[in-house]
Length: 338
Image (cartoon, rainbow, N blue to C red; front, top):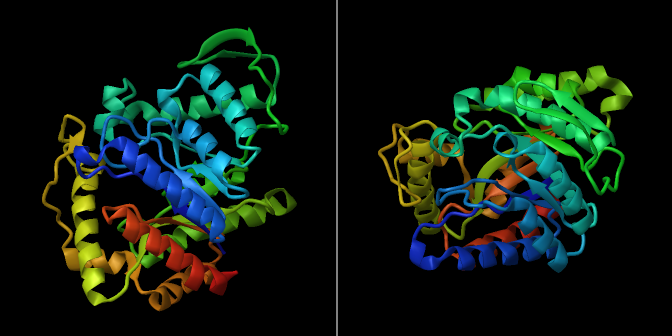
């Protein structure tokens, strides 16, 4: 089982500045490369202070220049807000500039307030995403492409330069529903998923959807992988655990606002709103624990067939604490699973 560090930026206070935050993430990526992580993940979100990364492909290129082997996953690039004729060329260039270490994670968007401001309402984004993905794949795999659909209508053109590999970088699909996972796997995509606040059974159902499709594909599916995203942190003691859980609770009070709530944002800063889930219930669902406990909590994932765990440690802790958690995970946890 492999591990990815999600470089999910969270700007709690504007005084800290985006520049300092991105420098923190850059240093985290370098440490992960040195510490045996398989990959780092970069979100794409705009106009808000959590998961704040409007330029994931540019950041992937910057990381490549300071690392030796770590893969960079866009987790995820939001296709409905891009023009695929432009985006395809940007992806090809990023594949080259990252020395073919790029994995293109794609999704349709998650926050209604953000998508509405970008003229791609969330309620309409599934249809636009599906067409965008088809157009993107065709532009990457074929030289002469024309398209006549609902969201794209153009005559024959060729995206230049052409990809380093036959169909461009590997594509990873972000999907939560178990049957959606089954369908996307059957189409030949790697899978990125998370149970969010769901229970253990949901995670098992998600893995089952992937496993069924992969088995049905036979040799065609042998290289496909499933990655599971979880909030995680290596703590020093009970006091440290309590502190990190409180930080995570505030983070989720913002996250819920834009994910399932009213989307109240003031000058880019998401308002903290009351949560239905108690802090005790949240603590049960997160991987915020000692290294020894982390091994116990992650072992069932390996047993059921998870290929990669994507760890989000950026939910409000200081940069020094986050770097320490990344280091301790690489020293005490990764060797156990490798």
